[in-house]
Length: 606
Image 1 (tube, one colour):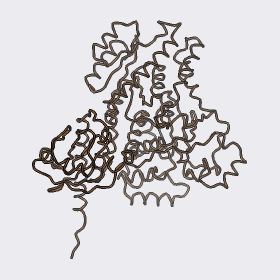
Image 2: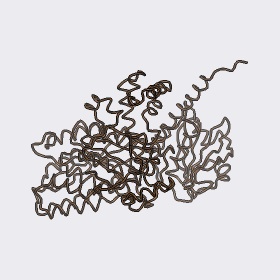
Image 3: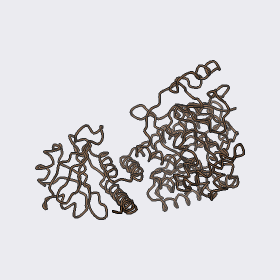
Image 4: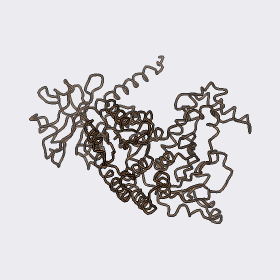
């Protein structure tokens, strides 16, 4: 029987990870006011996706990826039209008649899956149904049966990529985060046929889920003409997932102990809320990677971390561990690697195997932190782990060692682990890294010089109360956009201020323009009291930042920043300099593209 649930209570990221971790096969249908999507899973791995949005059609993805051109698409659509009922799917038509390679087709289908997940991450309200063991692979994917038999998309990798893309789109303004209106009892709202008939006469704004609203006419040949009725579906209860995992992995513990663990895991399954009370779709710069063959441990830590809004990726495969770490670092995630307790007589998880793998990861990835779990009775192994350089060793309860208090010990362990991991990710350096990572993601999407300069201004404003962009002209600095000067910092960038500052040869600005070095501290340079502070007002503390943005070895802007009416704080100048260095490279690419566009324009014959 299909399972159903509400996105308000179980975000789509959690649903996807649950399906992967429990290795379920089936079709996940997600319905929202914003659209409808479908993901198909085979033993926890994604094998197909469809979406109602026109921008997520395979032809559009192939076109935007420059895999095909408009002529190819028009030709394939024309062939489909004259084929009538015998027409093949678009991707099959392109393969047969337009020279599309199977590798390119499969890559486009993979992109479709990622972008479908990206869209779903935006949905905070809606309904999902999971048809267990019913695998409705769309026709486009069925045309590549050999590839699908040998290649299935790793759900964790797809999710990591989708979250990175989602984050980039948020920072570029392509996706605007907003709370969708709450629908009370959405599963009960479409309860009987009389209500369905009434809904047909309502405006689209009043319809919860309808074929017209969701664009289902072209999706999987839907024949129904009325909105989907969630009748006779079993409610998706996260408590049942906890109990299933416990029954499978801890069969020998008493029933009362099982109930205590289920109750605890249910209590920490409540969605994490940010300061304004809203629910984050995911915390995309924080991740825990667990290497363990203990399925209960994987599930329990995943549940505990999600309470804190932290992504968790799990594996018992040594090769997959490298892939997860590499992918996380490539996507500007700073993961914490957690090794489960050693398991005797289990390949890859004995004490010696754990030590060997852990030492190798420390050498390969010196920038990431490692936490080791161990039996509290294994004193020698714990000391060896600390001596080898692990960040911490956590005592983990074993049922065989303390049967009578196992559930209580496990609850204490998970509570402590949750607090500790929260502290790890709330460290100032990690928070700064998260800001750096998010800004770098947005920076990669920018193509115009003014947008890049604005991104630098916004990044610096994360650490300072007042920021101002100064454009370097031949003899003057020109005051451009600012944050926190013309209005409150929360109001964002203000209009260009346009006052000019002469570049004196004895000024700090002259030195920065010629050296390209940044400056943070206090200065006796009279330029500030004479020319800058009369325009913007003097800060409470005289400490300020001057951060040059260079392109083609020339300083083109200087970002000024101070703490306004607040006392000065310590800052990480290396983070700022690294980001502005990357912004300079992006600026060079933008200017180079602009020159190419000009050179490619046809000359006007007079």
